[in-house]
Image 1 (cartoon, helix red, strand yellow):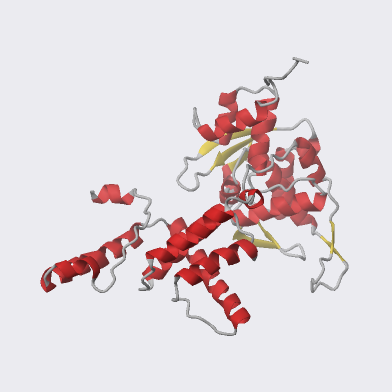
Image 2 (cartoon, helix red, strand yellow; image 1 turned 90 degrees about the vertical axis):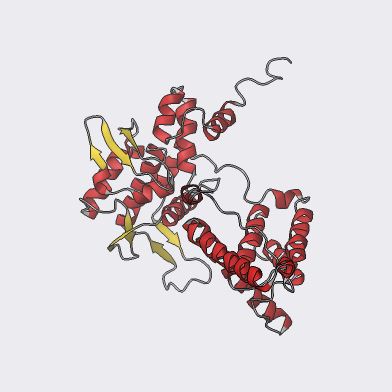
Length: 365
């Protein structure tokens, strides 16, 4: 495999188990030494070409493994080293992720891989029977339909009704149980209200991802005769795109007006389009992260009393749903969302939206 090919490989770490010399025992010492050195060099190279997202994920997996060990020490009275990766601890980790963390089964599967890779990177030999036992337990958990449902399904699409609820939501937030805030009711600063409204409507208007909204600069958004011309930056290796966001018939749900109101109130001319606002209404300078955008959508919907949980992807799926139901051409909707022609993900959206239009039982009784 060439160096160029290696740069595009999404690495799945193979299990390399060498016990008591293992397969190297069959070679003479000099050959075994060279092979061992190449084995080590290969591991280093695999680490170098591993995508940052994968590295970050493995780091989170190991952080959870460490948390599990702290929980284990608290319950047994005996702390174990995190390097103790055995059949017993791996099975216990899976059960803990299921019972305590209520993690989705697919997430648990990824955690097993992450812990295994991170442990080996620390020089720990992970027995094959440990990972096999962990996945055997995971397979048994998969027979539970309630557990199967965790983390499954597309994000609930945001409807125009949901958006109306969000923009009309009360700014007063009751103090959460256990909160250290002295006031029983906390009032969301006006600047934060304007930002969240503009951010949610912008995400809906461009049929965008939370990461795309987070990446927007003020100079990416230009006022034009018919609305906004928005240059949506490419994220996670996806191409960028240019879309138009029209003035809405309903002024309350107009992303154009909401953006202008936020931009004027925040005094933003360049730099990040959406930034932090503290509890006193002071504007920050750093760009909001994609996760912060997601959480803002979820919090706004919850405060508004929206009956379904909206997530960072709800605005994107909501636009596609509303556009399709309004009879817009699929190619126009795809242009807005950035889906390629023939995209199976886009087609899945359409099938979900149109599934009740014509069914086998319609009109036969």
